[in-house]
Image (cartoon, rainbow, N blue to C red):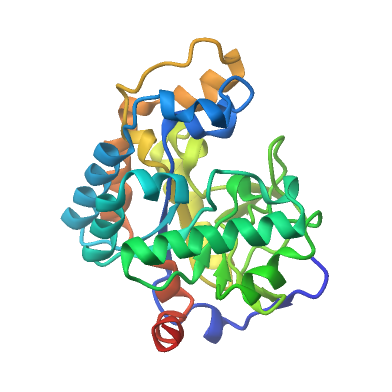
Amino acid sequence: MSGSKALSASKAAPGARFAMSVDVEDYFQVWAFSDVIARAAWDGFELRVEGAARRVLDLLDRRGAKATFFTLGWIAERAPALVREIVARGHELASHGYDHAKAFDQSPAAFRADVLKTKRILEDIGGSAVAGYRAAGFSIDDRTPWAHEILAETGHLYSSSSHPIAHDHYGDPNAPRSPFRSGGIVEAPVATAELFGRRISCAGGGWFRATPYAVSAALIRRAAATIDGPTIFYFHPWEIDADQPRIENASAKAKLRHYVNLARMEPKLDRLLSDFSWGRIDDALGLRATKDAAA
């Protein structure tokens, strides 16, 4: 990205080497189903994210892990007790935008309004400063040269909105793999590893559910050895909710991506939390003190 500047190792990773993140959205809000479920229809679906997210919180507690919860403003308005519980249990509350609109599908003005609205909702409910942002679908890239500046102007300190791989929905295989400065904030990409000259995602989501655990763990270790900063993993509460309603009118490809190995995710995630020491992204980037001082 133009204007980006790499961070030194001492600045990029003063805290946890591995940073866990949770994208707090429900099963009917994912991009795999966005062509068959309109945003206007969301209130007609059963809200299951509270129960699933509390299972995630319990799992993190059992393993002594902390995480950053990138939360939709739409969810926060409907599950305020969950937002407060995330903060009370010592995790970082961060923004995932209001209603899962991709950054590159918004104008700069619409993006600014979205991030300001979501920051206000989360801070009012959670009583905690919001410094982090993750765009829906990792959609901050060369199509959004204004995004980092807007995030800085609206009081955010970092973004974790880049997945530097080739993918049909997102990604830039030439983007930096390590945290870098851009537009006044830090952009902290989710984890990738390089193998035989190719970049491979080891950041979580469907990649983690579809890949044998031993392979995922090996790739995560490889990423940690080659990324100049924290190795960032992500998943969603719906990924441990194997009993969620099925979206039957979705495409076969979308259903495969969404439903693969849901029943195996929780024990697999438990093993991941046991094998690595996971912390919050703001701590891993050394930004919590700055955030607290500005609050």
